[in-house]
Image (cartoon, rainbow, N blue to C red; front, side, top):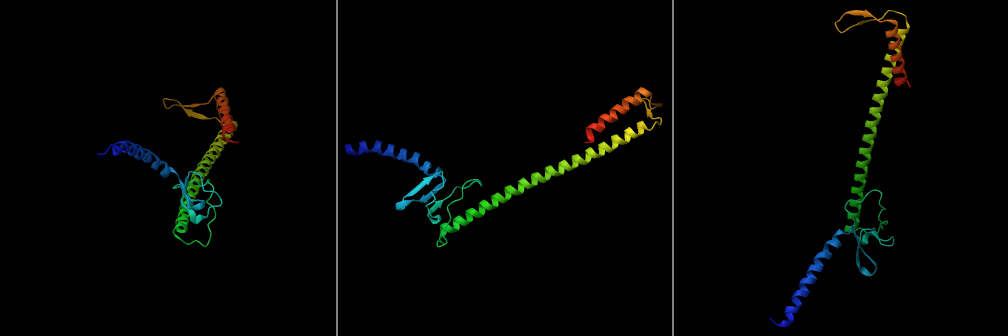
Length: 174
């Protein structure tokens, strides 16, 4: 081997290694377009407004709904990049519709849960009001003790029951 080729070998290895590190950088860019003078450019930002839609070669795979839309496409282009652009926007619309449907479903579930809670509070309110009416009616109220024997409420027990019914009314009847 001539001495010149030995000195190129480390240089070639270094160049190949540098190239291997640079290639993932180009793939990591989300946007790819043909810029002025026919130069292909890569960026994580959308191309400038002056770039025609048919010159945009690659868009982000999962572009968020909040991201600015790509520049308007000219109707004269009917090539494969226009079809890819239409497919991409259709996919974006489907994703946005799915997110909106999920959000609506969650809101509907919350409304249903709130309606159930409101109905339960109304039932508790009515029950507490009936209990207060019974206590205030003056009728003797009988209850069962732990052994199953029947006994009548004393005046102090009736007052405690009345205070409890008033607290329940304050809690449930708003």
